[in-house]
Amino acid sequence: MRRVLVVGRGFFGGLVAARLRDVGLTPVVVARRLGDVRMDAEDEASLRGVLRHGDVVVDTAGPFAARTTRLVRAAIATGCDVIDLAESLAWSEAVLALADEARSAGVRLYPACSAIAAVAGASVVASGIATPREIDLFLAPASAETASPATVHAFAGSLGLPIRTLRDGRLVKVRGYTETRAFPGGSRRGGLVENSGALLLRGSWPSVRRAELWVDPNTPLAMAALSLASRMPLAAAVARWAATHVDARPLGRHDGVFAVAVRDERRATTLTFSAPRRSYLIAVEPAVIVAESLARGASPEAGVVLPHEQVDPDVLFERLRGLGILIEIRR
Ligand SMILES: NC(=O)c1ccc[n+]([C@@H]2O[C@H](COP(=O)([O-])OP(=O)(O)OC[C@H]3O[C@@H](n4cnc5c(N)ncnc54)[C@H](OP(=O)(O)O)[C@@H]3O)[C@@H](O)[C@H]2O)c1
Image (cartoon, rainbow, N blue to C red; front, side, top):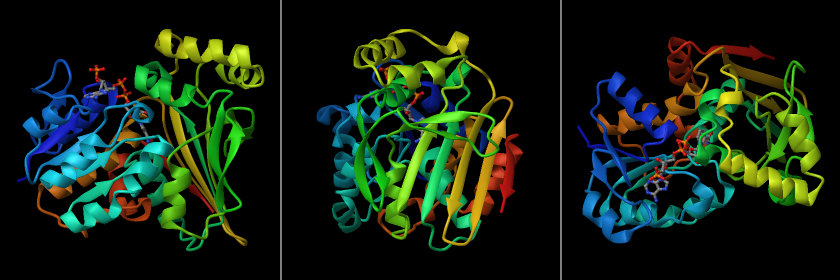
């Protein structure tokens, strides 16, 4: 059995470690402060002192937009596989640039192995649409729990600022949250947010012309306020500051939804994952499935593992249903 390290002991790091224990593993929680072992993911000496050849590393140390790839490069040099929960487009871009090095070293890298982009990738595979043209991701997080510093930083970073999104088959700049789109079923709207799926989903399916993420913060009045603030630079700056300095969890909701709408020229399929509580497990389970299989000896091809091959949809959907997640597929 390979050693599994969970880097970061915030909200998602704690959940990944708990789920790994549920499936019979004994993860080592690695953090800058409290944790089984101390490690700063941005400090080379600290990384060298902790990482060992053969480790499976699950990196949850967000916000990833504020990180460098020091950990990934140290893992390649040491011979560790890395699964990350990144949401950041720039982060995934930097991981993709290390693909050849990882392949030569026999190391596997799973960027954004979370709702974005592993669940999205598994959903496109399950849709049966082989050459998708458009992929829309919709997220309304269980904000009463998930509005942690790193997660809020990740979404607030798009507010009113130029972001990159995939349109006409290339990354173009638009202003975050200025555009909104109705969720499948029309019950709510989300604002446009930069995310790693734009790059990684296009990597899996070169036919994709548009891949975008729409986020409803799932906190009363927040969507209307964000969409208004995104058009006023000063208000946007104040809202970005407030989002990262004020704990919004007391105002948040416990229910959550993640949906994936896939289209080609002839067909459309929507997969909706939801739960009245603990919907955040949707984002945790892909990394748990991958870490477990690597720890127990699976040996997939080395290099960057893209969303279409990170997790088997049947395995993922069965696990999620077992965890109380409702999955609806509309064709
Ligand atoms: N792609 C997706 O679908 C998806 C889904 C869910 C979450 N995420 C991402 O996952 C990340 C984690 O979210 P969260 O809610 O768990 O955040 P969180 O509660 O704020 O926790 C972040 C943790 O990372 C640790 N950390 C940051 N930099 C570190 C470093 N250099 N070395 C070691 N530890 C470091 C922090 O440690 P300290 O306490 O020492 O600061 C903290 O414990 C976020 O970036 C979020 O956006 C992505």
